[in-house]
Image: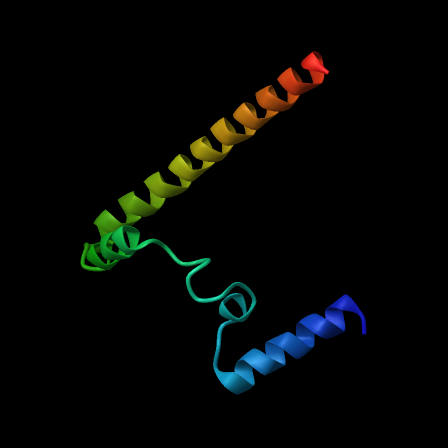
Length: 85
């Protein structure tokens, strides 16, 4: 069975058993936000559309900044390890 066929079979299965594919693959707790983040997101649902737009413009920037910092840190650690070997 090819990868694409496996994926299609999994998608059909999730529709039959009414489960999201990520829940089936990763479990319920592995991909979701922590409890404190869930509470924040629930509060954000009560925001006005303008307030939600502000949140949606800030969060992706913060995620990108975090990813760049993490990438730089990992790159520095890898470079240091190469120099000490």
